[in-house]
Amino acid sequence: VDFSAFMSQFLVGLSRAMILFVVCAGLSFVLGVLRVPNIAHGSLYMIGAFATFTLSKLIGGSAGFWIALIVAPLLVALVSLIAERGLFCHLYQREHLMLLLFTFAISLILGDLVKIVWGAEYRSVSAPDFLKGTIPLFAASLPRYNLFLLIIGPLVAIALWLFTNKTKIGKISRAAAVDREMVGVLGINVSWVFAIAFVVGCYLAGVGGALVAPTASIIIGMDHSLIIEAFLIVTIGGLGNMWGAMVGSLIFGVSQSLGVLIWPQFAIVFPYLAVVIVLLLRPQGLLKAVW
Amino acid sequence: LFKEVIRSRWFGPLIVIFLILFVLPSFIPRFYTYILALIYVTALLAMSLNLVVGHGGMFQFHHGVFYGVGAYTVALMLKKTSLPMWTGFIAGPILAAIVGLIIGWFCVRLTRLYFGMLQISLGSLIWVIVFRWYNLTGGDDGIPGIPVPPILSSLNNSYYFILIIIVICLIIMYLILKSPFGNTLLAIRDNPQRCEAIGINVRRHQLIAIVIATFFAGIAGVLFVVLERSVFADLLFWTLSLEIFIMCLLGGWFTFIGPVLGAAIIVALRTFVGIFTEYWTLILGIVLILTIFFLPEGVMGFFQELFKPRHIETAEGGHR
Image (cartoon, rainbow over all chains, first blue to last red; front, side, top):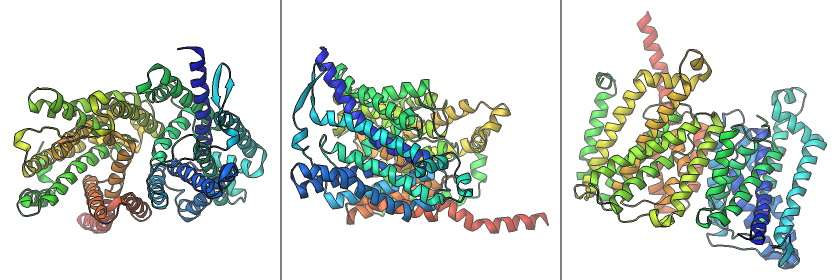
């Protein structure tokens, strides 16, 4: 394998890892604060992608994508807010297994609703003109859109870090993650803290869906293939740890794209193998878990 | 050993139900016979999962893999080898149990959600291999037209075969759960730390439970092939595993017979809702939400709660 092929696979894997990171950071945040293993996260990601398709088609042109990138995640956040206030908030006292199955139920319903609204055909979104084409980078030629992803990923990480560490609501939600009863005793409305944390996490799922739209075909079932990867990433990173989600995404994305070089037919095996190895060596995840 | 079964107060009614089910195919249309047989296969799968989930307290998130391994083993042996037909029927469950031993050996080192996650990743590995290895497994096309032994070629015969195997399996499972091993498993579910402290090898018991459960899942896989004569990679996909989970929850996972009921409800719903609408999963999701909100103990658990007060009264009466 020559160096440029290796490098371009590596960079593509890295940029795919950024999308995974955006989704997993949201999943991890919800998992850390609410203790809810949210399977519906994948469905929200799918809704984000489909909404991006519709919006960018409606508006058209390069502006369409940029507006969709902003509006689609907000729509997803709205859906999640409705689900949270309507259903989730009555169930926080239940055990994890129940919550997991409950979010699975939500994902089944959302999955079929997407099918009703958008149908079962393949959809695609074209990247804005400004991000079309490739640029040379480290002896490889990288699609501009992937470079854009490589920039956006760390930006999201920084934004989320600022949110959880520098804003009041972020600090409260971190406190609620550690000891929700104590936070409640201090006179803070924990229920709304949870709602906000949930919506923020789901918003990131929407962002991930919007970001993935130009790179992949948008289709029913993309939620199921993504959410399992997202869960594994969050687990190997350490439940609830945002930087863990970053590390996990990098391991997952890069091992998959490099696997293509080694054994194309079974490239998809490599990330799963990596997860197994990590879990066997460090069962509690690479970085410190919140719980 | 069988006295336990015969002495159970459900023995009489169960015999009647069994006899009814046995003569039923002569009176109902073929389609319903097929649906009943499908319910039996699914019920065995759900029961086997419940051994580890409801009675063992483990997060067996990817049980479908063992079902798929059993099905694929028998399918490949019937289709691609010239070994005697019945060897595949035996090899299926055994290979499923071996895979269960390997995966379980890793999983029992972890607890709760981590257990489940490791199992999903290991299970997904197997799914990916089945899904991608076109030459052997046919990939996402699966393997259609599997030749089953001639004696099972008619639907009624396979119905009887499945029914008899299921009944035997249920009796064995019941005996396992009533044995000292079953009681230890319950104790581990309720308090693993205390069990460890009194000298029970928790991991070994959990591993044995997983192997037993995966063996039965393998049998369910074999029976699936007998009924459907085809296999496909979706059998090993994680959504199916969670669907089995739902059956256990819906039926009531702290009861013995609950998963059978859950499987019957889900299969029947899917069949008859599927006639009217293609949005079956929407209905499944709504059923699941209603179950979680209103029947957290499942249908069987609900009925047990309903009949409980009377029990306590008679018990008190006895003491007086």
